[in-house]
Length: 222
Image 1 (tube, helix red, strand yellow):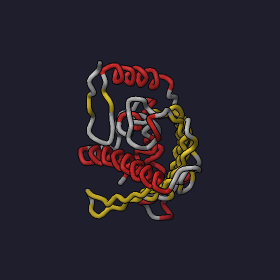
Image 2 (cartoon, rainbow, N blue to C red):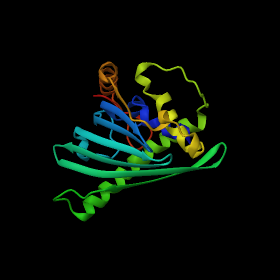
Image 3 (tube, helix red, strand yellow):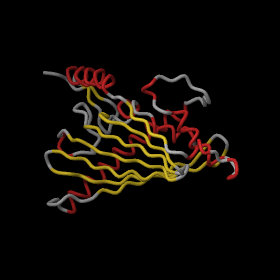
Image 4 (cartoon, rainbow, N blue to C red):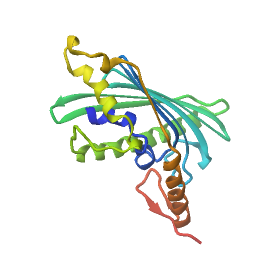
């Protein structure tokens, strides 16, 4: 289950795995709560059904684990057709030394002026997009080797600090140390990553490569 929680600090995987475009990324760990604050924008080469009409949208996300296995993630996305609000919840628990159960749900607020039928269609598309993102993670977890002391670069995020926070839930209460629960903050510089990501998106658009709910497709250019 630690492999799931590692995602809290993994800024780069949101571009490559979840097809978002982080522009701000910060972690705060304190007590039994580990939080991730992320701002981003939609990618023009991706449409997973999580925004209307292919329009560019700016998103604000705050994901917090309350303990080792329960996460609440309010999200707000703003674009030309207004603001969309949603809440993602996921929880997981181990069932053996090498496996776990992962459950998730998403709630989408109906925007003003949108009919119930339109809202239902959007909510279903939004949930399908979220599911695609989770299944991308699952494929990684199925093939990921456990490494207790990974070699990291700066943009990999505070993996060791997060794992130290996580350890408090796997020791007796008297063995919980201040280092596991004291406040820790880390903001990742996204500027260098954004330079490469902009280039990759431009190359995808030029080649007609797009990502949707179906596997990646290449559309013919005129």
